[in-house]
Image (cartoon, rainbow, N blue to C red):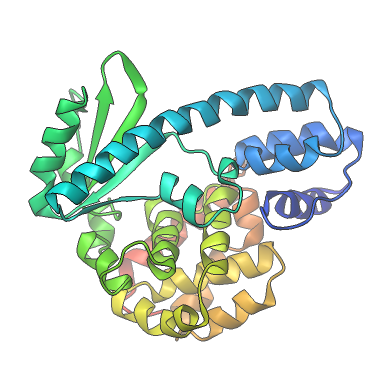
Length: 323
């Protein structure tokens, strides 16, 4: 099997809603390695295990059992945080991991998570800190070169179990150089859902920001999140998407994410949705810098890193709203 064929098979297996396909025994190990590299091991393992059992698959299943257990523990903590936010009517909301697993993945165990992310307005930062302190958490700061304030991202840990991580975000765009152009904080999240941050359109924009601004497309899992959020859009959401992307300043990133899921998961409808977002030279350049091959090569290839960093440079200089 060629590398291109293996990549295509990985994408098919990583798609939570695509049917499983037959896999040769000698292909299992390379696919499991790729799945780990791209953080899509849960769904790939689920599909492969339905066909056969190997020592490597059993090891992967044992690994995932621990990860799912951590996710369940974190889900209980998230429920306490949600109740606290609701009771005190705080301007804060849990985003990403547990929300994605519950709302956009048909099989929640396909999307385990290793931390809880809370988006807060400035007024909620203090009360959320008090809650976490009461739950036994401590704010972690590096002794040198700490960027907590600069990145608007607090990391809270339990001293006796630092795997139970909670991150409090003032903005999901952590890098100051990018925030000069684009911001995605509590106000933008609420805007994207017209006051309801739990809607499908806000989830879509959170996945876009996470993939394209929080990270640099370094794992396929980031785009599986985009794929699943896009699938949950209603016709009204899809119609509103281009204008909302423009208002949020996310036209470039939303268009590129849609083009990538169209290419990687063979979805012409996503390509058509991308074309409805007004774009120009920056979008065309972004597509040349970050294509499906660059994403799939991201964990190991130096050229992919160069291309994705060049895209980050493009993001810094494109005028707000341009795409």
